[in-house]
Image (cartoon, rainbow, N blue to C red; front, side, top):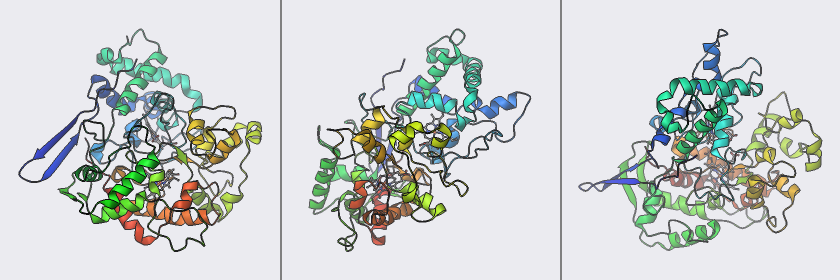
Length: 485
Ligand code: HEC
Ligand code: HEC
């Protein structure tokens, strides 16, 4: 049983003498369940290295491995991400795997505006439709050192640790730890960690509008629309916001001194405003020759849609192609054979595994096709629905092959709020800075217009940037950083 999510409370402390705001975003919910969920999130004794060390066949290396090993808490100035391109995993002789397939993402506001018909999916490839499923798989999976055939060992081990170490928390668990079965205990742990994850939100005001970043403060001060009207689409809101910001004749800037959790000032000035306009502006679709003169158009908001700065769907921006080609030569990804639905059904699982693999010099078939891997032929689940939404004509006449093709190298759009705490960027962690992640779009959008990007998202064709746009865009995105506890 899950607790209802309590309304979000925000404490705004103001120092009247100086015109400085200090904002403290409370966690959405400080209930005992959330507090226990956080302890379980940090619990290292569930991991395989701890289990193996406790038994006679010891292992080397750190013994305690928890969710927080790869998702650092804000005290460490990380928004639940770590600082690795790809996180280390516990070593196992059996498979030699050393690192995760992808970069560990931030975890704040993952469930914003979620509906029961269309849950927000988790992981870059949309593998999980609920946090409970993710936690069950995570605790018993490779990230904590467990191999696929060890499921029954790990479920029993987790239950043993809970019965021994969390006896005092029985009431919060909501079940008798002695009478409950091992898998009931795992489910209870998954529910608690999920409550904790649902409680991680950016600061919101009493009306539920984002209010914690310099950008949010700027919108409020200048009476700019802070969120879509009921029924208004993200695209229509973006346009309305752009039009109102372009009409601002005498903007009131935000400048409130150093931030505590970010190495920057809490400010929104002319450079940030310039970046905001580039971020929101969308360009025409056309060939590289017709539009060589265009710049200053990011079209970023078509996918990083305000106010959450993500559309929660899956798009191909060319990250996998870039990494594959860097290893196997330009054009390699374009030429690579990717099975159709029918071919896919006939492929064995070891061959299919190559499509969710780290690219390597040894194996030309190893590549990360993202969401493509999670679509099952014949299954029209939530992931199918999310992708269908961005395939032209799909909502009226859904075509399974069209959705499958659009999912090639498509990854979940991450929010660009609070990037200051989640470097490096992109699913492969290939960009160390916000500037380098932004420059990526200047290059990839030209490749897309030139017809040299496989399965380019149509929105990539409407991005027109040059080097001069990078600074203002990065300044704008830094104005989406915020303080939170
Ligand atoms: C060894 C490192 C590691 C550990 C341990 C780990 N994670 Fe992750 N986590 C990752 C990586 C890498 C991803 C991205 C995976 C992907 O997208 O395929 C991720 C993704 C996620 C996401 C998805 C966020 C999004 O935007 O969709 C959530 C939520 C999450 N992890 C929660 C947890 C929880 C809860 C635990 C503990 C049970 C945990 N993680 C343990 C590395 C780790
Ligand atoms: C077609 C949709 C789309 C457009 C247009 C787009 N993005 Fe993205 N963005 C994504 C997706 C999807 C990812 C993750 C891609 C991946 O890792 O494979 C991403 C990742 C990012 C990241 C890294 C975030 C992180 O946490 O790792 C940044 C920064 C970013 N985009 C900025 C921008 C900027 C700036 C623009 C405009 C110039 C822009 N994006 C335009 C879809 C888009």
